[in-house]
Structures are given as structure tokens and as C-alpha cells.
Image (tube, rainbow, N blue to C red; front, side):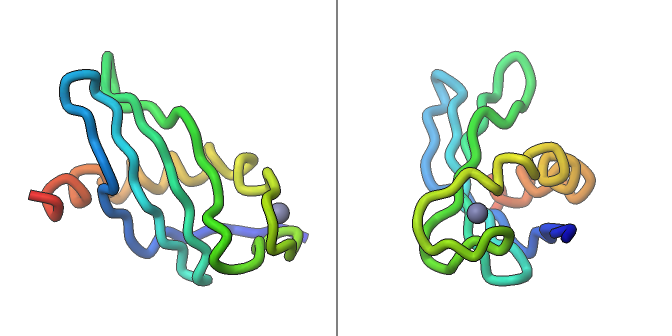
Length: 94
Ligand SMILES: [Zn+2]
């Protein structure tokens, strides 16, 4: 089974500009919602990702905590870079 997450939206949830730490909410096309943390310095880097338990996990179908989405960190990071989601999220938050 291969799951391929597709980001449909990303929005800023909180930020600390001084320390460069940002929290974003990531909406996936299948309804999955994730929380991602980024560290801005020296360059944008995803430090943590977890699924919000609003819908069952798209991978293992559990509706409680699991770590499946962590294995898609690379895939999601790539989509965020390609579609400039961070820039869009920060612009929308202003
Ligand atoms: Zn899971």
C-alpha cells in the first residue's frame, strides 16, 4: 500500500520571530490535518510533524495517536518547498 499525501493548504498557527520557531497547520487533500513545526534559522527546516486527531490516520486508519505521518516528512517537505507554502502561509497571516 502506498499513500501519497497532497497538501491542499498550509496556514500559520503560531510563531516566535525572535527565536525563528513557527507552527503551521497543514491540510491534506484527503482531509487529514497535520501540525508541523519549523525552525527558520539558519534556513527553514521542518523539525516536527504530527497528525491532528480529527480524522483517522490515512495510513493505518487508527483514530488515536500514531507516527505514520512522520515517515512522509521528506515528501511533505518537498511539496512545501515546490509550492512555496511557507511564503503563502506567512503572507496570509499578515
Ligand atoms: Zn497511522
